[in-house]
Amino acid sequence: MSQHPYSAATLVGRRRLLASLAVAGLSGCQHLGSSQTSRQSTTQRVPDTDSTRGRIDLVTDYGGEDWNAKWEREIVPGWQSRSEVPVHIERPLGPDWPARLRTLVDEGTPPELYHCQLPEIADLVASGATQPVDGLVDDLAAANGNLVTDRSIRIAGTTHLVPHGLVLGSVLCYRTDVYDALGLSPPETWAALRSNARVIDEAESFDGRGFAVAADDPRSDTKAGMDLRTWLATAGGSVWQWADRDRQVAELAFRPESVRPALTLLRDLDQYSPDSAGLGYAETIAEWVTGNVGQCLFINAWLAGAAATAGRDQVARNTAVTLPPLMDQRTNSIDRGWAMVDGTPIFRDADEVGAAEEFLRYLYDGQSRQAEMNLIRPMQYLPPYEGVLTNDAYRTAPVFNTLDGHLYDLNRRLVEDIAPHMAGDRPRTAATWYAQNGTILADLVRSVLVDGEPLEPAIERTRSRLTARLEAGQQFSSG
Image 1 (cartoon, one colour):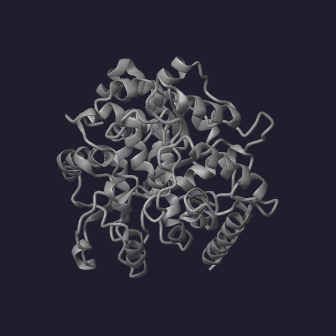
Image 2 (cartoon, rainbow, N blue to C red):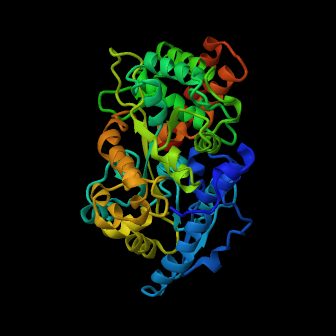
Image 3 (cartoon, rainbow, N blue to C red):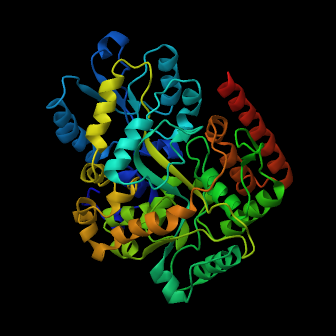
């Protein structure tokens, strides 16, 4: 993780800090609905077909000073020293890029590689636009160690994403110094979480809020929906369930008896939160780094990394991670949240499919090489392979020598203790991947928390929208 000279304490206002943190480490998360202020957008024109022949086109949102330097000074020159096929790195073109990608696929002119997560391209995978990469990923796993989880790179047992990094969503993050000062313990139930939030919010010794609840505009940020999936899981619920014994067809679950308490929990926590209407991924980072929140849900241990980058060592050193609590001790939950793998497919109709596969071997083949890629943003993306975490190149990296090794300890805990509880056996078909890539769940949260809509009509409307989206995905994938 690159270190920048600014200190959060010297910045005036949350938005100024937000802009600075966006440059430092918020690119590479468009698939999670990050605010558009965090995107590394350009106005580059997509080259025509003839100009792309004989080269690898990689479209990536891995940007910012650290990634740009890596691409330009090391990755591209290193590849060109070993291959006659050049690689062209293209930055994101803005929020319309997924639609533009589909146009390029329909025209038979896709790029070879595109950094994303499977839900973003589920319809393209289902239509046969991507090249199965089972053999490549098997080879990488043989070199790097078994995948921590492979649930997020497969459809119907076939691998369609070459992993870059692992994302554990909606981990419960909390301030150990605040907990210790107030005599609190990591909550095991929602009741304990509510109590902790109230105590933190009312404490005179902590000038901050008890919890951060996200309900930002779903058109630019979907954290609210991703968090709702976690609370639904810890209530014993789900969005989808299997409709058949062979586990081939999914149907809507999303039962009011589990959705209702999850929304009620969010509404309860909202009274201890900064203004939820303006909180998404980027804004939550800003609130955490400035010490304005004592606990919240977030991705991996990214909050600790952002605090360290901003020079807020006390916040970083006292950031801890644990599993989100269950609704109560009797709750039977499939998992405690969600896990995704970020990476790239290889598009079947691209001009240089073979060279693209070799380029990915060059990027990720070997524990030290995979470690090098994950160390560019070590707290944003966990190593997707088990062997990388303990490899010397990763474990002894300079970023982990700071703060008495606290950042490495967080990543180790995430991979070893938390990841096994984040990827339960829920339906993951082309249709459900397609159906979950949208704003439906975030719309529900915002309608309840911001607009004050009663729960029952809001839930029923959401069930109807999810049903329609799933049917569209099933129709598409079967055609």
